Length: 191
Image 1 (cartoon, rainbow, N blue to C red):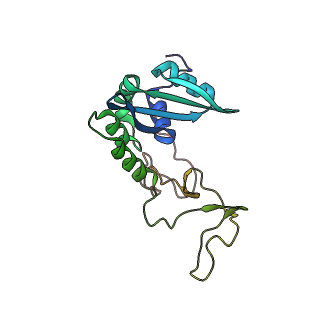
Image 2: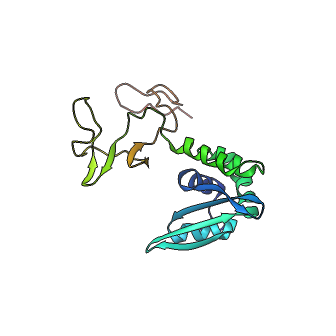
Image 3: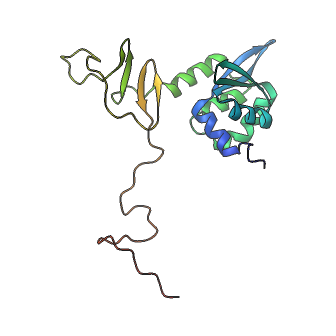
């Protein structure tokens, strides 16, 4: 495979992180459509592999759009690898699903689990405000100056850290070799 061609795993990961999937009218029926915004080189590689078109939406920002049969083929191929957008892919592939069902699924996927006490900061006129920590202070009265999460999402102006992919493990979980308590490496087995 050409090194500039995205693998199934990298394409599925990009869809899970960045894709918007919906159903659009096409004659008497609705067909699936998808778009991703990002750097031209990445999106051109997706267009070469799966079809669709890229167009400029800002100086250094491009959008890749794919719909109909090419998208159906791509989603069928990538579906086993999708996590976050799996439900949307299933609805897109279902000829009987409606645009309203797609909107409801999108809202469920994008909306943080209520209540969402773990938001990091909220956009306000003068920058970013910290979460309210007391009933007696105004929400966002203090400027946010804490550490940003390594990854996350923004919804309705509030940032949320992305949940971990897997639960954290303890020092003894998942290790294939024991760890010495004194920090020195174990001696190599004699061969």
